[in-house]
Image 1: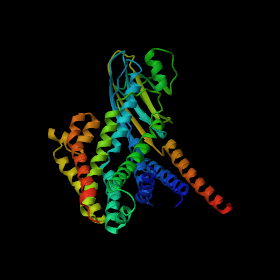
Image 2: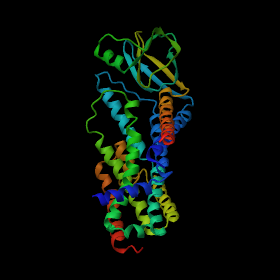
Image 3: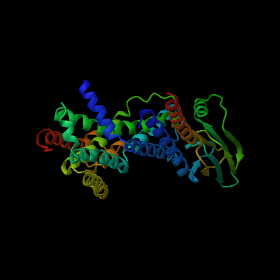
Image 4: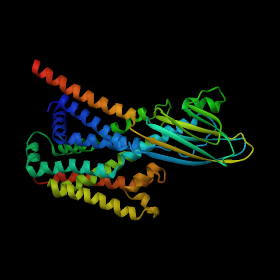
Length: 161
Length: 246
């Protein structure tokens, strides 16, 4: 087998393997955390999220208490801890329970819980991720396409010359 | 030099014949992407001090990447396959033909073992480190914190390779050497799993490598397994160059 044909085959197999892993890892994943936030303070939790459909459920205990919730990416979080003005991926103020969806890019996200009430609260955070990881899916398809194009070009060149 | 490079080319084409290279790439890519995509929760980082948390995240990600490379299941299988092809060369008479060319036995051994060891190592490193910026797209200066993990992975691969090479030269036939290599490596892995709570496990493979990357063992814990690997390769060298009858 010629070296470039072999390279094409290797790329096709690598692409198929990546797609296989994307399918294997497409099952629903649930991450849970219980966070205690003292009165007048804030707590942060970091999560690595993939380019999948993400659903976030937050429940505040006791249910009469209210917290502010922000979801920040790394750049926004750096501005947040430096005390600079920052935007956010998602934010809601004064809530005792919330259920929202968002589509993250692959990377680290920070959940900030700010307790502006006079009592300590407990927050139950549930993050549900499902569906294909879109970034890895694109990598798999790209590798597959490059491999197929390489082999096709070689076949055409072989016929021409 | 030209003589040796033609030997390297010949060994590369022989050892990585279809579909051996393809299988190694598939296993490496599968291992790499499975490890990257199994990472969800960052734990309970409550860092409120400054930007250093990105450095910690990236360093932790790199540690996980090196940890994923020490996958006994795949590495044992790959090295057992490649070294059993050396056994096949001996049993089929190919080695005898090769040595009838103007190559010294020492040259053949060094080229054969270097190619057999380095190719899976390089493919694994590439398959695991190339996607790293894709999964951790943060501009962080990592420094040399990863060198210990790199050394651990290198020594882990060398250890597995040395055992497979020794068995293949001992049996000189491909199928028994493949089965024995895989069986011995798995048996050792299972036996040491029973000793997991014993502090001595930090000296015994594969846990010395696993614990080294996880930070439970120091570099000096890797010395016994590294010395064993070097001793086995040295014995194989002496056997191949002086006593092996073809």
